[in-house]
Length: 153
Image (cartoon, rainbow, N blue to C red; front, side, top):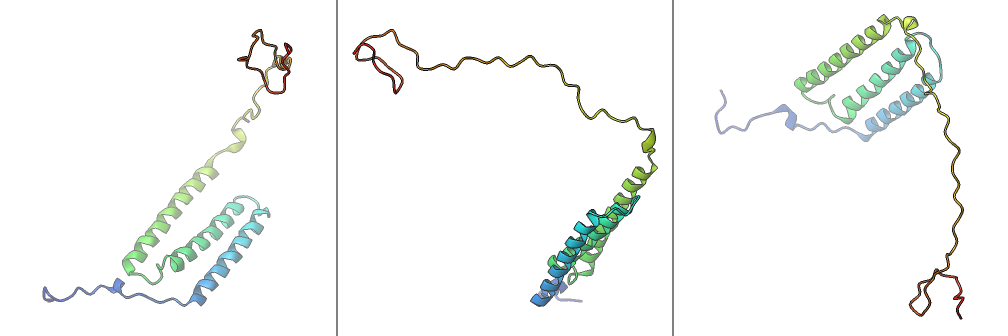
């Protein structure tokens, strides 16, 4: 039994030093997976395979970021369990969403009217352009627009 004055030993106080080479490798993998994502988006696999491929690549990229950049790979087993539970529940949500998507009969759904009907608008009214208007006042205090000549002088 530990004495009250003994320091509490925690395993997360030890820091794992990761060489920069590992970060460069993970970054390279993320770049390759991003290029693979762009290529997969421009290719038709057919059926639901497009969505499965896109989610698979996204899951691999998220796993690399979480494991290496967020240091979950070198953390406590409890934190790894929490992160794994998050991935499991995310997978369950995706499976439920995909099951709902697949179970719908899309052919029986009536097509929506995409474009709203356009009403006939009256032709636009064009107003004549107004230039400087002559003033009725005469005198020194008269306010005139710039560039006009005083006709009284």
